[in-house]
Image (cartoon, rainbow, N blue to C red):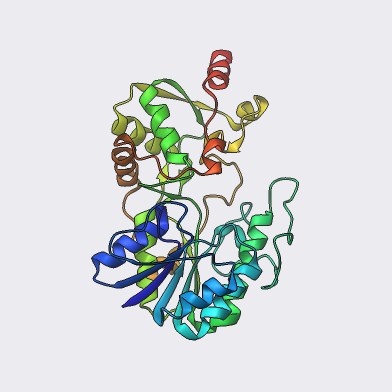
Length: 337
C-alpha cells in the first residue's frame, strides 16, 4: 500500500504515519517542515500546500493508493480545492479529516451522518461563513464543510470524510486532557461540572489513525462520525485522571448555572464541559460497522499521562493557552461554595 499523508509530523498525522509504517506500507509525507519532525522511515516532501508549484512537485512523486489529509483545519476551502484538483490524477482515494462542526445542528442536536451539513462552496475563501451569537454554527464549521465539498467534487465515490468530535491521546497539542491530568495531580478540591454521570465521547488519536488507514484500503465513501461509541462518564474520567497521576483530589460537582454565574467558560476553562444537548450525542455506528474500534477511554487517560510525565509537551500551538481555569479563579469559586 502506498499512501500520502498531508501533514504527518505531529499528533494525528504522526500517528497515521507511524502506524502505516508498522504495517510495512510505503509512506510519503507532505508538510512545510516547520512543526515537528519527519517520522523516521517516511519519504518526506517539504512544501506549502497553498502554493501550486509545490503541489506539482509533490504530484510528481506519485501515484498513491490514497491520500490522508490531516492538515486542512486552518485552510480555506479553495486551498483544499487546489490540492484535490492538482493531485486528482495521482491518487485513488482521498481520506479527509473533518469535524462534527460541519453539521447544521452541532452542538444543539443529536447527530448522525444523515444530519444536514452547513452550506459552503468548494471555492470559498477564508472570509466565508460566520459564528452565531451563541457560538454555533461556527465559521470554522462552514470552512470545513466547504473543504469537504472540494474533496467530493474532485473524488466523488473515492472521497471519505472522518468527522471526529474531540480527539485525545499521546501527542495532544490542544491541552484538554493534559490540563485535567495536571489538575488531578495537584489534588485538593477540584471544580467539576455537574452532572457527574454525564457521558462524554472523546476518541483516542491512535484509533482515529487506525480507522483512517482502514479506510485508505476500503471501498466505502462518504462521511463517518468518529466518536467513542460507549463513551465514559465525567466522574469516571476524572477518577481515571486521579488514579493515573496518583493525585489526592476530590471532585466537587457544581451545577452549570452556578458555574455560569461565576463566568466559567464552557469547553475551555473546564475542558470537555459543554451543556448543549447534542455535544456528546454523536452517533458513530456507521463508523463502527465500517471498522472503527475504540479502546477504553481509561487507557487513553493512562497512556497520555505516561507520555506527558515523560516530558511529552508537543509542538507549540496557540490553542494550548485557551484551556484550563486559572488556579486563583478556581480557588475563589470553591471558597464561595
